[in-house]
Length: 309
Ligand SMILES: [Zn+2]
Image (cartoon, rainbow, N blue to C red; front, side, top):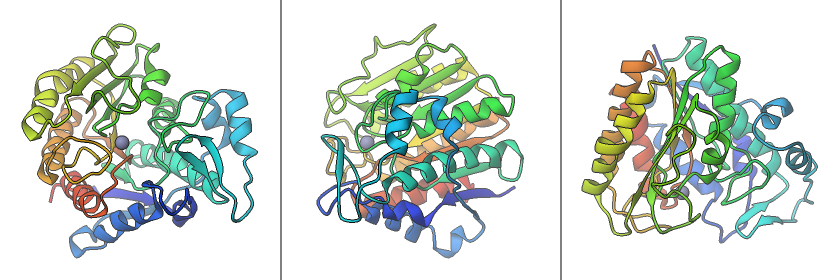
């Protein structure tokens, strides 16, 4: 069964400004890497816009109303927080990001793909129930998890290897024992959450902070000894990955020194978890990654592993 690649050109039109690290060039770099012949078998699908009801499932009505009313002029930029900036194309891109995550869930649960990689932007894991934050507008991973419930699933896990803690996903999951969130992240670092004692309800949140300057050994050990055992114990029916590649040693936004191969290693380990509990079903969502070459190579390594090539 194929692996789906879900994206949309509208995601290039979210333009937070010429000096912003979360640039359209990121998505261009990822998609260019996935044009190589070895990725020909990917099943390419357009990301639809998420329906309003899906946004309201994880965000407050006031927040959704405010985002849907966002209408910057063609050259205007509106600051939603210190580093989350909306341009004229932002709302549509954010709706495609959330809708792409939902389409990825459809792909694996309707059975026309074994795994899905959703290459969209803006990312989602910092968006909180009632505010935009950290380059993120809508909680794509949480929206995908909620959507999986509409397919009849109950126990859903999000694992997050972005170098920043996914405070938004954690906030949306921490009081629901049927949802599970596990993250490795640099600590201290933005956004400041993700301590080991943030355990959710019934231990359904597991955080493995990494000291600045940690490398491959510490990154792999966190997953091998803490996060994957906890994920196995939870035994999800669907695995959603918040795939940020900014723990790479070349990334300018953090000080973790992971190699491209480490992302392939972790992807394979997470697929083994999915084989044990989820019938191999994995939906992976692009989060961060700000060195264009490292991002492209790491995303390609991740997708190659999802395709088992
Ligand atoms: Zn990040």
